[in-house]
Image (cartoon, rainbow, N blue to C red; front, side):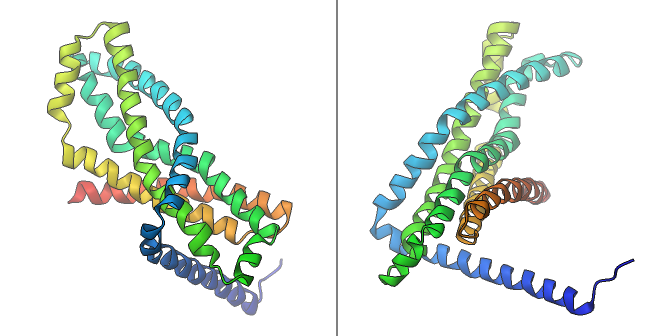
Length: 260
């Protein structure tokens, strides 16, 4: 039976604390860069187009199929209690509160997050970041910050698209296929969804997820080993860590929102 030496345990703990401290400093530098980006909005605009526009197809397709499933499952559940007319309310609340922000963040981590990590990792492997530092150009300000804020802005927009398309999917299944009254579908939704409590909480979640996913993706790419294997491992870590972080943050945010 092998035992770990106390020095080895201490070294591992110290290394993890150093990593946390480095990540916190990088996150602070990214937050402090907002003033610089206001003077150069074109950098952020290009990243919003790159991450948001190129992720739009998978977000829209996923949203409509999630809406189909919610319409079917919700109808068969509500029918047991004679409340099938409330299907629109069920679909809308499920999407704007939970499924819209969470699934969008997971898809964004798999689509745009991995792209960010691979891009930054390859720039590091090609010594492009080191070359920028040699020319007195801060790579955090010039490369990382526009991608960070672009992802933060794109995430709520993509979540809104996901929820809107999901509602349309629920309408197609519930009204056009099953035969629920269209007036009841929309009136129940309009009367039961609160702009601040429901939609506002969903937007807040998507913003928090945008901060988390984009920072994790950039950190993994910035700290990747400058080899093809290192970039591949960093890309894998981005998906795993970002997905687990999104699910954990969703639980924390939901508990806080319902306890207020």
